[in-house]
Length: 419
Image (tube, rainbow, N blue to C red):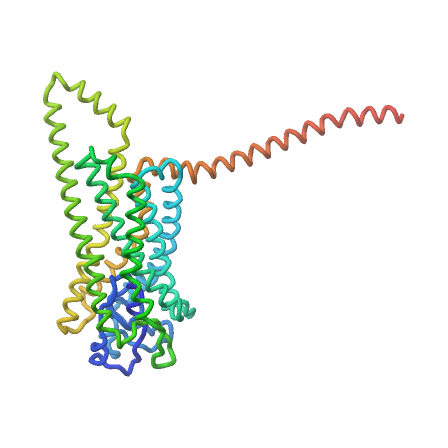
């Protein structure tokens, strides 16, 4: 998670000393190492070149100079975090208020997507707070209270986001593979119950950062939010549990459901093709198909839900795969070196962050109803306000002209009376 990384070693520490403290904590929200800043994923480089810090990344010798490729990657990664967090937060908030608007909030899938927008927002804000604390001189994250809250929110929001995608995929599976049970299972009340249950489970499972983490002092007087070393065994247990809950089980569930959805869609397309081969029933089949497509929004809803699940897998699986590899190598005792695998992990982590930030683009591209409501809520509202303002100005100008025209004859009468 976000805070698995924050304390630094000084240059006098050797690679062997650092390797003893090389642990993987959390679910890879920023970094997979303990004792390195979030933008130093898997100890690829030394962080002291620009900030004046003389610390060395974990697992890397202080005498080793990073390559040009790693330095470029560092710059990209350092700038991608705040950009992704800020843009993603704005997009998620716009999506949230769109989903809870009257035209959309009557469906269960809208509630799932609205809840995911808020959980992704919480994750991105925690990510931004961690970046500010590690990449700037303002130590926002490395303070007691804020340290524990940010760590908790990253675990909690990450858990919610993953399992909300699972619920969204389940609902899409029901809509496509078992359409006659939609009215029974895909209801607003059930969606509210599932969301509340996930929140309660998340709080129960991920309260441990509140008592396993603290702000500690390191050589040079630096203070960093980190996990308490005497609880590192317990933290490892939570690490593997978190990996199962946010990586293994959800990924398997989503992949299996996507396979079932794809198979059902292919079967449906083949059935339609066979029906069209009957020349006597072509017109009736086409007309019925057009009526069904125009009267029911099911096809539009399932298309957007399928896109949400697919994009989630595309952006998450690469990071999870590399992270799993690093985890295995770490616990086998193999030293980490700045190689291609580690560079790929940084790139895949950027993709992982994007999975929390690109939701609005996915909804606008694949959700016809969402796009219509969004444009009416935000774009049309702005245009209407400009139109009303312009109309008001025109009316005011016309009224002023009328008063001036009416005043001119009066002036002439007054002049004649005086003369």
